[in-house]
Length: 580
Image 1 (cartoon, rainbow, N blue to C red):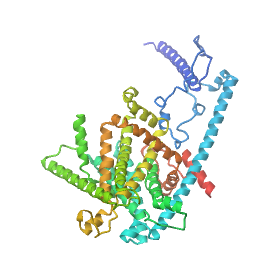
Image 2: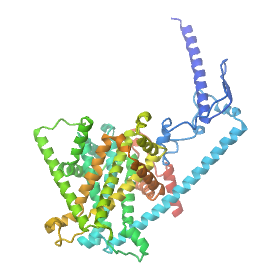
Image 3: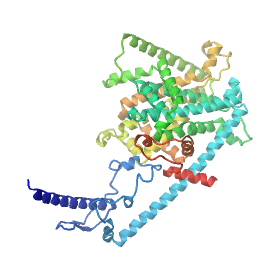
């Protein structure tokens, strides 16, 4: 073994590798910056490269090649996406400033113009963002105020129909809003924590560990989602009962147009529920999953959701799952052993019970619609009410399935996706730039609005003891008037069934021209910024309860303080400063 020869050979390889990396690094910079007619020479080498007809590659980079184009959002941290000038020099490139001499004056001016335009767009975007937060907060405060006024003046369904005192209605209303918030944020946390090893947070978050252990056991995750979906619909129905104003309600002597919009049509209550009860918890739950469900309120919610599924009320949806499994010849995946004879008997008994409940609920709702005994707006013919009811069920079902199908097709090869032209157009629109994030926000708003309208259409207004549906007893008629039957119909027919179809046939599901219109409408809803107040509330909710991002506990990252970190938080702080 000749040590000197080996050392010389090793040194030559190091120099050769250094030249290669040096060259590749410079080529990379040229491609990113789009430099033209540049001649490079590596020091100590006879190798030279002439670049004459180089075409700029920046414009050709698509979202598929650039991961930040898909995941980058306005609220990303400053360091997550940056210009090439902000990047640290490659360790093999000793002096990147030497590249300046290759730039012509025109190219320098062009680069300067681009920087000025980027700064201008950044300023305009910040101003628009601040304006959205400001007018959305104003809209929310006004909505909450008039909803509370209608409650304390006994002009809601809770006081007029059920004679519930205003103070009790107030507490019930806000307890339901808080419960809805826990359900909306909790589901995302339980789903998102599935791949995380539980021993990483058993010490820091013991209650979160109990919740995930319960829901992640066997097939409990699927059971939780089914039960939770019904619980969400039921809670929204009850919120509608507590906060929806009666006909001809008036508060503060507001103009008739304002009263009609915010009270008669329920816009104020929808805004209160969507912003406070749905979007705000979702904003924090996305990044603070461990902290968000580290409470026994989530444990209670999980047990209630699992109990609803166990009761068998929604077991008819499993027929859809089994049917599509037979059609596609794909077995139903399960984390539990096959059912024995007794378990099969119990399962199919609950399926039959669920079918009977669904059929009866649908019959009662349709009978009330044809008789005009629901909270449907005056002047709408019964036949139109029935059509609108089923149309809304279809729209809600499409939006529920679109979310499932979108994530299923996100990684599908473009060649395979192009086999269905309509699905390709829909997916191209949905996955372009930041459209996916915007669609999910707009979809949440649209779904909630549709659920409120369905709740109003399907809620019975029959006076107990007078013309009871199918001649049922007074106690049963009072139970029908709660809107529970409409919640059953909406959950099974307007939500869960569509989710199963979308998960079985995502490409066929997205091959619907109507979906393109729905995507556009959801993007329009998000662009209005009507619910941007959720970012303001989430910012201060996070500070008050002391939520920390999951990476603090799982990766040892530095804890966040009250200082703003993301662009969104900075815009929120600017708005608060202006208000002060």
